[in-house]
Amino acid sequence: LPRRPADHASLGEFEQSLLLAITHLGDAGYGVTIRQEIERRTGREIAVGALYTSLDRLERKGFVSSTMSEPMPERGGRSRRFYALRPSGAAALKQARARLEQMWAGLTPNLRRSRS
Amino acid sequence: VTARPPRLSEALMRWSLPRTDREIGLGDLAEEFSTRASTEGARPARAWYRRQVRRSLGPNITRYMAEHAPARLRLAPADWIRDLRGGVRSLRSTPGFTLAALGVLTLGIGATTAIFSVVDAVALRPLPYADDARLMVVRETQKAGAPSVVDPRDFVDWRAQQDVFEDLAAASGSNTTDFVDRSRGAQERVSVLRVTANLFPLLRDCARAGPFVHHLERGRRQRPHRRAERCVLAASVWRRSHGGRANTDARQRRVVDRGRHAAGVHVSCG
Image 1 (cartoon, rainbow over the protein chains, first blue to last red):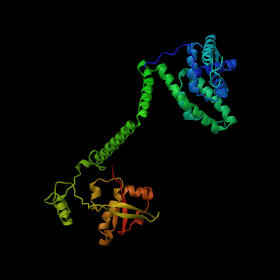
Image 2 (cartoon, each protein chain N blue to C red; image 1 turned 180 degrees about the vertical axis):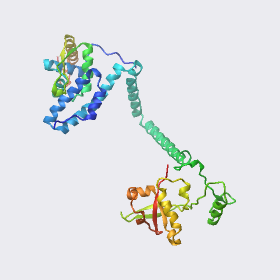
Image 3 (cartoon, chains in turn green, cyan; image 1 turned 135 degrees about the horizontal axis):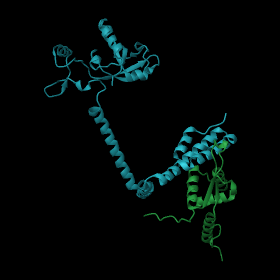
């Protein structure tokens, strides 16, 4: 069967984790800190390749913006690329959370139907 | 000394990352590698770096294909993966058919490989001698067509009277014997073939033929019982017994049940 094209505004679980990590980090969100933030909160090790593939996709969708720092000696003279959440990214995050909450509505945390 | 990331992994990462993210990605890895090396030590940091690169290759290549490959190829990996998954699911759902198919394939591939190996060795692969196309085997047969043993006196007459071939050499049927390496105290069973001394120049065995052929021919002038003791080791036996060292005294080796000493090493030119 042909694949259904992905909803442009929808966010996968990993994309949500990235946007939330960037939000948590504020001005300090670049590759290393974003990965460490996700690993610290979820216990899941993230590969650099997967990180930049998803960040590139989020930037193309217009959910994040990036700026380059000055070259830094501790990075072998390379720059950092800092990410910031854009309003469309924040809206997509809120929408994803709302969708999930709607699906959780009527269920207890241990997946039983709540008495209403 | 400052620890360095593993070079091969770094090169793989540099190669696989898209150009736009290359310096940033390598910078991230270098920064975290440096932190880990100073807190955990160089070895765990290198292991972490290698793991990162190993896990990043798939996403990097997929991304590169999505951005740079022609549209025809861009869709292909996803299709292949989907087809592959479908195939695996189908095979798992019918284990009897899968086992039968695997059995037939295994037998088929095994039989084909075995037959090809024999055909290759017997018919396709040239003999490991120069001018192998000019080599011929001359046999004597009985009336019924079965091969018979050539009388040595007949061979001497053939060799003296023929003018078809450059030369004739004789070889008797092979059997096995025990070869003992005195220096190692090792013993192994080897095949033995009795041949006339002119076989080696006839086969153009050039590499190390000189010393032992010279030795054999010199043996002709020795007393008959000494001459009968000479033998030649195959190169494979020579390599196994003392690593192919040319200066080892081959005469220290003795073929146990015949009392013959090795006189040289047979190395073919092929």
